[in-house]
Image 1 (cartoon, rainbow, N blue to C red):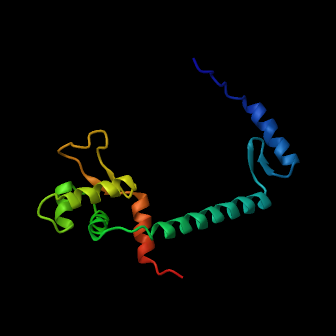
Image 2 (cartoon, one colour):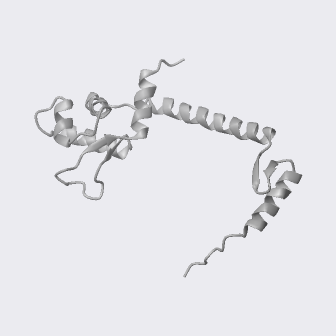
Image 3 (cartoon, rainbow, N blue to C red):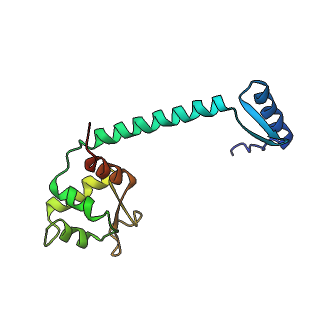
Length: 147
């Protein structure tokens, strides 16, 4: 049986916040209302910007992931809306689900570029696929000119 963590009373939280005011990390606005000092706010914003830049560089590296033309067609088809495997087969230029199409779909799923709408039941008759946030970022990186 796990331990139950009892929340701290408001007075204890206020005491901690007041100590952070003494350390010039917070500014007290009211009895129980505090905010970061301008210096701390700038520091966190700078860290956030660095994280965003690192993420953008990761996306650019991911953009160099080699995808087949079938995989690219599937990704672009999902930009507009979710689609069934049958709809994706046609969008990729096939009349039936070939081995190549199935491998492409599996690769996009394993790379987390697309997702199933019903992952608990992969063979469901109403199964559809959607592009993931990761897939959107990859497409966006392809569209933007690199420096």
